[in-house]
Amino acid sequence: MRAICVTSDRSLQVCDVPSPEAPPPGHVVVKMDASAINHGDKTFLARPAAAGAALLGSRHDIWGASGAGKVVAVGAGVPAGVENKQVAIYRSLSRSAETVGLWSEYAQVLYTSCLLLPDAVSARDYCGSLVNVFTAHAFLNEVIAAGHKGVIVTAGNSATGSGLAALAQRRNIAVISLVRSATARDELSGHGVKNVISVAEDNFESVVGALAEQLGTTAVFDGVGGELISRLAPVLPINSMVYVYGFLSGAVPISLPSMLFMAKNLTLRRFSNFESATARDQQRLMAAMTELRSLIADPIFRTRIGREFTFDQIGEAMIYEAQPGAKAVLVA
Image (cartoon, rainbow, N blue to C red; front, side):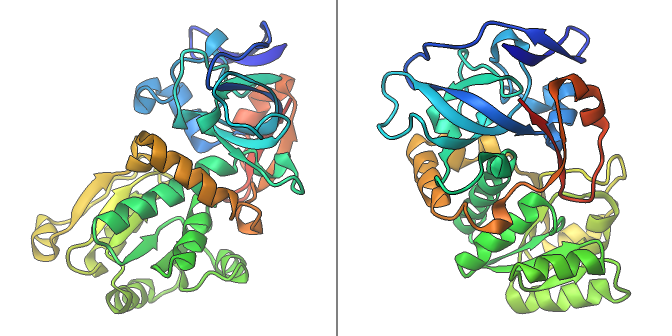
């Protein structure tokens, strides 16, 4: 089969490799329909140490963590009803030396990395969804366990941000979503998300500060960093915690006076979806998949496809930039 593999110099090339056929216990073989290229795919390719063990163990060094397709073979111990079903995959959820990466015609993963999709939906519409919706679910579980009553999402119109807002509202958890423009604000509000604020507004800080105090949003899911957190931190409620997940601002530093940490008892920490309590505990992971399966058909969780690429166009796909939230997608 054809697959996109990582070379010794961390570049990507299309290779011919053996197809997985008889999956080992707990594994499934999936005929891939499509795989989304996420920001993490580019980051971890260039900086593999940043991923830790999350992307290790792919046979033939095949790349790709997110995708969707149809299960065509199952190993021993896989629950009944999985074979011949459409699934969305986030392979970092469960690690195995038998994994065959998703940027291929046929992938092999542990079934616990798969979310069964409803028969009526298109698998391609969810080829990048599971990483986003699972991240949002796991994050809410963590902040609720930590005693937070509400959340501020800095990249509110991103796939993870919009999913987080939707899940939070379903749980009656207060959420404030920050977006970059009035257009993004209107788009997110059109999905029924409340408390959407554009950071381009002149009175952005005062509006967020007042609403954060009112709603008690002491947890910040930060996918931006840099200047935005520097602006946001002074108006956060006392005892707020900023969870760093992404870095859309690139190398722009966060700049905060030490007195602010003392006065507001602020905490800055990272959040890792595949190191979360939800991902590490098998029972919690299965419970999450069951809950998310009942919600995934909501249009807000669909992958925003910017453009589709063939394997031979991988170089072009990796540098493709679309509107915020839209993704390049590899079609097997």
